[in-house]
Length: 451
Image (tube, helix red, strand yellow):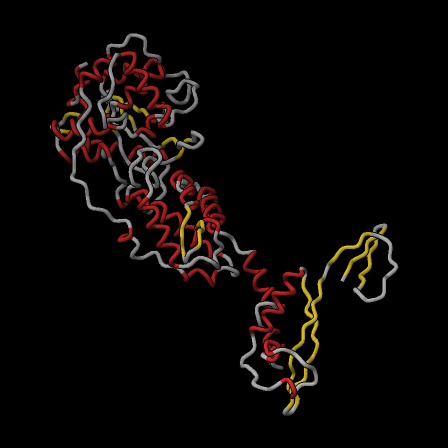
C-alpha cells in the first residue's frame, strides 16, 4: 500500500499490475506478502492464498515465518491430494494456522499489550519519582541521589548485558536483582579504591526498594509490585567483620596550635569554637544566634535544632538525619570568647557568608592547620574532633554524660506531640542536669575550659 501526497492532501494506492497515474510523493505505508496456506475441506487439502501485511518487508516475512512455525502437525499427504503442486514445507501448514495467527505474537491484541509495556516506567524513572516525592515532604534525599548511579552498572543476565536502571518494570526479574547485588559487592569505590562497604550496598538496595514501592500507587503497575523480593539479599554481599581498631582522639597539641593563631576571622573562630563543642559537622554551620541561650547564672548554652544539607546548603529543622534531638550543651568561657566577634553581624555565625556545609567546614579547618604548620594524622578527619570531645567527656565525667552530650534523644513523651520552640527550650532547660557532673557543667572538665 502506498500513500501519495500532493499539496497537503493524500490518498492510498494499492500496488497493482497496471501503472497508476498519481502525481505527488509516493511513500510505502504498508507492505504485502502473499503466501499459500493449506486448508482442509472434508478429506482433501486445498491451498488458499493469504495476504500478509506489515509496516516493513521484514515484518511481513516474520509474520509469514510465524505462520509456518505454528503448524501443529506435519501432513503426510502426497502432492497428488492437493489441487496445486507445492513442496513439503508448504504442506506443513494447516487450516488451524490462521486461527493461531490471530491470537499469536503478531496479533492486534499482542501488539497492544507490547505497546502498553513500552509505556511502563523504567526502574530509574521510578527511583527519580520516589526521590522527588520524598524530597517534597521535606525528607533528606542526599543518600538516595548519591546511589542513583549504581543503577547504571552493567549486568550479565541470561547471556545478555543489561543495566538495571534501564529495564522496564515488566522486564525485571529476581535474577536481575541478585546479579546486581553481587555486582555491587565486587566493584570498588571511586573514592577509596576499596570494595563498597556493606552500609553503602544496603543504602543502594534501600533505594531500589523505595522505587519499587511506587508501583502500588498506579493501577497500571500494581500488578508487578509483588514480582520481586528483597529478603535474604544480605548473604550476597556480607563480608567477614574486620577487627575493630579504635579511633585515636585528636592530639591536644594540634588543637592548641590553632588556639595560638592570631589572625582568625570571626567565621573561623566561631567554627573552631563549635567544633570543640563536639557537634556534628552538618550541625556547626546551622547554629544560629538564637540557638545560644543564657541561663540564670549567666552561662551560655548551645541548643542545636537544625543542620545544613550538603546539596544546596539548605538549613533543615533537624539534627541527625531523620530525627530531632533534645540537647542543651554548656559552653566554656574560651568558646564564648571565640564566638563573640561574629555575634550580631548575621542571623548565623557565618556573618553573611554562604552557610557552611560539611565540605566548606573541612576546607576551613584544614586551612587553619596549614597556617598553624600542622596536619591531621592518617585516618583522622575533621569529624574526629567530635569523637575526641565525647571521649574526653567519658573519661573525665561518665559514659551517661558523654552519651547524652552526643545523642540527646527526644523522650518518648515528646514524640507524640509537636512542641513549639518555646516549649522545646523549656524541656531542654529541665534536662541540663544530664550534662552536669558533680554539680558542675560537664564542659568545665574539658581541657579548653582552662584556656
